Image (tube, rainbow, N blue to C red; front, side, top):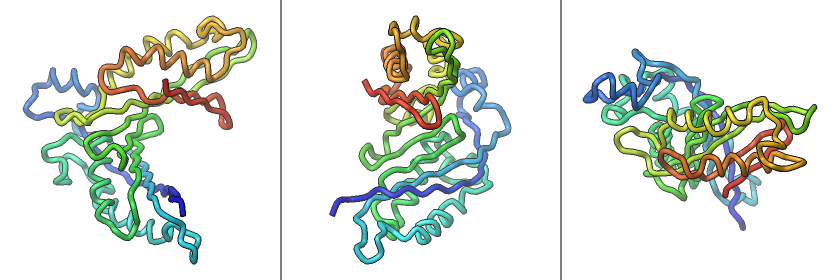
Length: 250
């Protein structure tokens, strides 16, 4: 019987700060930007855990959802309403980036044999940023997805607010704890995508008489892929509306 993926979400709140104590303030600010600001800042994190397994012919389930929820609650209890930097030993010598937090959560969850095979741990820092650790890539690599928004016209009269999700994959830097420099990525997307497309006619941008989200996704890919500060561009998702989105992966 084929494997089925099952995903469960759970929330918790915590605070963190990006800081390398051995660096001076100028270098910390240059590398980490506002995430360096003292004393710390908090997030309502959303944890998505995906497990893989065969459907039990008796229960019709990959895993009992109540059991999975209890495991997740037990794991996040250690992290909920904590300061990652000050309260948790896992971050004594590593920066509590989304990538590093997801990696720690993966390690904790992988030790729980009752939940079956762990496939993906996705950690949302907020609606605009999340990190993925997967069984396929291992614990040394992650994907980071960042959301950007702008308004652009499909023609002379019809406009949309577009959400653009940029996904970058790579090894987690052992010093910064990041796959890619988010500040540099933000500047790149603002310069090459948002400022170019915002309030503009997409017919002129993508050079198509009847542009669609598919054209826009390909345009964004080509604008960003050669210029990334680090990591590899793996996906561009353009969301045109609640019911319509487009993915481009080169």
